[in-house]
Image (cartoon, rainbow, N blue to C red; front, side, top):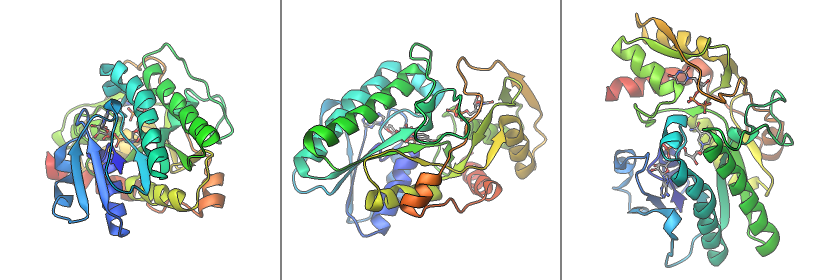
Length: 306
Ligand code: NAD
Ligand code: UDP
């Protein structure tokens, strides 16, 4: 069972689980996802989709082997627009998914985030870093919900012996991101393709490290098979400034768009790079798709939908 299965990462995960021979039930309430993302899977006899809000509780017949909790708004403008829902799906939604895993004797996996490190004072970020989060800022609804979600997973492990996993996902991109989702990659790509100004927030010196979605999904499945209850960073350590990212996308798109600077959002993390030593050792995982190759694939997708 995949919550958030009609989202960007969730839909790729459903596809990969089906390819591994598993039956997949995807749940989604479409708050930020789209039925289009799973349309190609609907023909598969092993795939089922149900529109459902996981905050309301989910009761299923039959056996469930894995509960993968990916439901949550993930883009800063989207969680800023839905702060209460974001808090609920990280807390109540996570508790409901853990309750389902407990009832079914299933392995539970939480899609957590590098945002648990907030605006990090340790660089790159290892899992042992406790983070630097502003609970009352505009990102607090997301960061604190995910931190609470991690605490819920550990509590169900300790109190009920549920087999749990926590992955901390760093910025991931690929086909099926929503064009209007507001994150840097969709914004820059749509702007470059349309010949509009590229909106770099602040001076663009803040950094991010971008992972292509197929690498991420491979890491998720390895963690289901080989992981333990402690968090694992999944991301690509190739770090770039946001300005470099914008310039690279303009070049790859062959665009004439000019870069324009806009106000930096409140609490925007200044640097982010995963330390993936633990994923390498525990899972034998390493990202394989180089930054520009991944960006080209994502760009092809945005060209096809715009
Ligand atoms: P997304 O918005 O494309 O997907 C999230 C999906 O969850 C959407 O389809 C949405 O409709 C669904 N959803 C939200 N609340 C729900 C609810 N109450 N009930 C049922 N469905 C609900 O975002 P994404 O980028 O695919 O992110 C997926 C997960 O990965 C999220 O949990 C996010 O926090 C995490 N994550 C993503 C990234 C990234 O870079 N993409 C980074 C860190 C963490
Ligand atoms: N960003 C930007 N222009 C945009 C969208 C985002 O400069 O149009 C910046 C944003 O301020 C942040 C980085 O790009 O520094 C990554 O933003 P994103 O929303 O993709 O994810 P975040 O890592 O902040 O959650």
